Image (cartoon, rainbow, N blue to C red; front, side):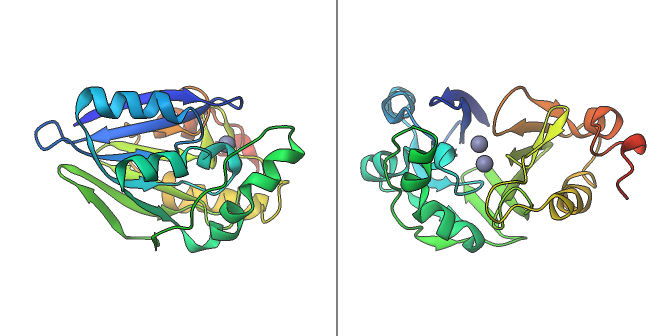
Amino acid sequence: MILIRLVVGPLQVNCFILADEKTKEAVVIDPGDDAQDILKIIRDKGFNVKYIVITHGHFDHVGANKALKDATGAELLIHEGDAPVMASAAQHSQAFGINTTSSPRADRYVKHGDIITAGEVSLKVLHTPGHSPGGISLFDQGMVFTGDSLFAGSIGRTDLPGGDLMTLIRSIKTNLMTLPDDTKVFCGHGPATTIGEERKENPFLNKESGFE
Ligand SMILES: [Zn+2]
Ligand SMILES: [Zn+2]
């Protein structure tokens, strides 16, 4: 399987492209911005993008949805809980002094336990709310893409509309910390980590955190 990471937009979102080496079928996770950079890779590699999957609807993760969908015809997938956030992403970005292109509506909603398949890419949807109500993580063979729920050494902010700290801690403990220690964690911003590393070192999740 091919995995490509690009850092996009002013808030430096990690956009990921996962593709089947043989069939070139691909999934794009969180095309937050810089559509032309993402599309250049897709064209250069000859990828056939089947799905655009959004970990959550915040503007920094959805800004290139329209351009990507127009260019590839891929289906846009999100958890229903974040559809309203995605719908208001362009207005929300202006509060941060950033202009974001409005996202089209999702073609389909995904829920916990769904599998998103493109050739050998097979992403299992894990509902991880708390940073936002419809936040999801995506698990595939020893890797998990966590959006803004879990970061290396930290967790997502919970002060935005629909955010809740205890919900986030509970989602991470239930649906992410139950994965094997050697699972690679690809976060929505910043460097990658592993579940084992976060179990030991993350001040919100380790034994010293005080959170049950
Ligand atoms: Zn976010
Ligand atoms: Zn973000």
